Image (cartoon, rainbow, N blue to C red; front, side):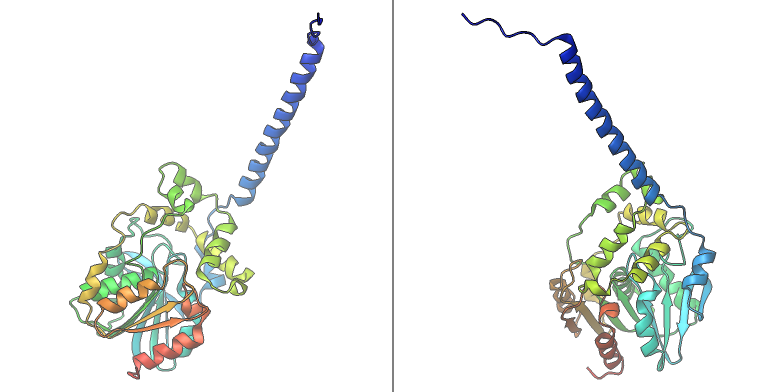
Length: 329
């Protein structure tokens, strides 16, 4: 008959538990230290607009008082006016190459839309498509533009087609839509889900990893080599502009931020549609949705180009825009 196994002594059991607790204690402290370091490294106060203006404002940019807010605007060149509207998470800098090329023959007008760039947040936290369209109309009135060409990329393209389809003023001459939203299925990233979650969204007002910007730029550029440190730094610092992070969460919570895309069928303006073949944010297949619905529209799709063709392929895009504006299509 086998003798029963000896029961572990009290001290042996205690040593095991102490060892387990020590490992658990160290693991918890390690996680706590890691989170503390991560928070410390990614916690950033807002940057004052004054210092950012000195660093990023073009010499010919100016502040315009429009709809009870100060809007940063850049006006370059003389001739027929063309207004350029940037995408979300961008600024008027996206049009630098176009501005340099077109200003020899056109009056090029770029703005930092409310919630972006140096303009900063809307005073009433309004970020609907209707607010942006109203601001565009007020800008044209402020500059006494009776007629102008209109171009937009991403969010700016949505504002442009919404304005052109609903405006009865006839102010818009020719329309240029670059990677326009409207027909794609809306997707929500983790950051956008956090931005829509009450209480939790407040964390984004202070905790902003630079990796968010790197991921975003890698998404909109087909060629990662073009995503330079200086490009990342500019986008990051402009996001930290006082009020812009709260504007991001405010925009994410807007339910009526997209007008019905079917209204594009009302557009009668000569229209040029530009798209990057490697656009992963809005598939190039949606270029054909616009092309089919806008009567007489022209379509150009660029190889090896992502969501911001005006930045990634400035030479070819501006060549096509100039030909379109001059009636050579």
